[in-house]
Structures are given as structure tokens and as C-alpha cells.
Image: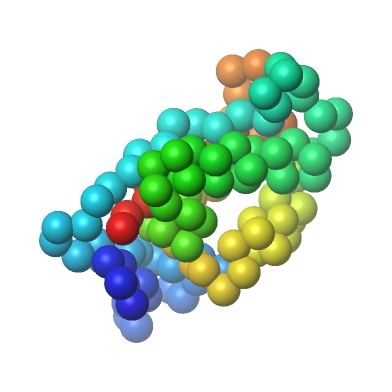
Length: 128
């Protein structure tokens, strides 16, 4: 499967939403650590609604990956910070739409975010 292998231990809870419990990265793989990407476009604008912000954040993640010679299929770990638990289902649906069958390890945290206009932030680790 390339430089990474999904791990879902049979004696632990199975993932239920398009992610893996763990990812094993092969020795010698290049790693790319992507800082928290925010819902701000190149002009400094922030969309008003969650869906638009979420898609913009994923575009920003993809742009950082491309700059590092990778794409979304190289993601091994994604951490999503949500400003409100109410966005949980919409966030999950958009992530699955964008990633398709690719299921990196995943953590979702509900917390205050640096700028109150931002409804989410996503950081990631990729391997190639």
C-alpha cells in the first residue's frame, strides 16, 4: 500500500466513520507536517458558513501537501479542531466526501479556536 499501512486492532473498537485507528509508516518514508490550516483564502476572506469554511480548510491542506510534493492520499494523521460540537456530522460528511476511501488516523477536538470567526482548523501529517 505504499509507505503506510492502516492498523485496526481486532481486540479494540473498530473505527466507524472513514478513518483508521492507526497508520504504520514504513521506514525511509518522507514525512510532511502540516500546521493548522484555517478557513481563510489568499485574499484574507473567511466564509460565513461551516460547509464553505470546511471545504476551504481542506483546499488549504491540499495546497500545503502539493507544495510538499504530496496529495490527500498521502495523509496519515488528521487532527480537526471544531469550535462547536454541532458541526460534528457536517464535518465528518465533508471529510469523507473529500477523502473518499482514504482513511487516515483521525482525531476531532471541540474547543475554542484562535479567531472566533473560524469554525474549524485542521492540522495533518503526510508520508510518501
